[in-house]
Length: 291
Ligand SMILES: Nc1ncnc2c1ncn2[C@@H]1O[C@H](COP(=O)(O)OP(=O)(O)OP(=O)(O)O)[C@@H](O)[C@H]1O
Image (cartoon, rainbow, N blue to C red; front, side):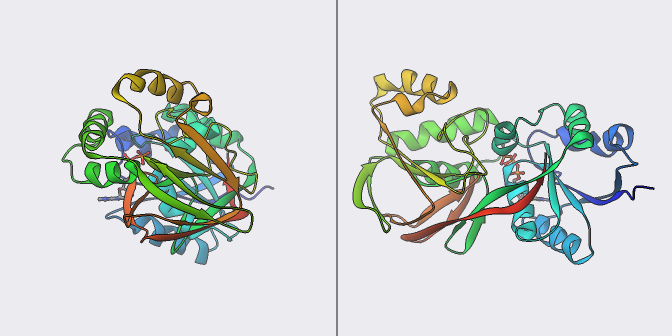
């Protein structure tokens, strides 16, 4: 007899636009209960996902399913990295960058059916000072957007677009120092992104060649476009072609130190403070993923 995998589903009730309201019914109906012995918990506050996932590790769970967006996934991944517990994903966020990169369906029923057939593989995680992330973090313009977006009353794509427009008007290029064993350079740009996966979310590709299991961090530098360059740049971002833009350059490495002018940053769209100096290091294949 095959024993069912001890599984905890962690639902973020405030992520995205509320697709997860019906999640318990859908899990009951479509999850393979012979393969997964399921318990469901909801997060009650920011950071709760990490606490619940840590409990799952100490209580010998086999799988934790993150139900939310990249912020929820990141909280859970932080607790599961270097453990034997695998993370599954049912995307219910606003951007769902990692889920889209991994090809997980945005439709909840189909995402559950994918989990039924999924296998366990390992992916990289990235350490940035005291933080760890698995999708995309950054400094500069996108960090400012994350801080601005956090102040807004409503989430979703329209609010995000509003935050982008507001920040674009006030933001100018910054200088970033990048140094490791191979390079030491000062670059001017609008933003510097640290990518494990290829996209921010909503199929906005900032690092088209990034892979989550290659042991590398893709550092993408984007210079501020002139207003007339925005339509083409936007089209390139959403068609995986940003690497053909003259405003884009990339460093691919496993470890690097970056010095910025501000102390702001973001991880998977959540505003944080990295400080002026950021040490980035990849931890190859440090997280088990059920996908
Ligand atoms: N009950 C809660 N109340 C308030 N905040 C919460 C609660 N539970 C979790 N959170 C926080 O909500 C944040 C946003 O969630 P999440 O990133 O999953 O959704 P999203 O921003 O809509 O999606 P995406 O990141 O894919 O764009 C998480 O970083 C988490 O810390």
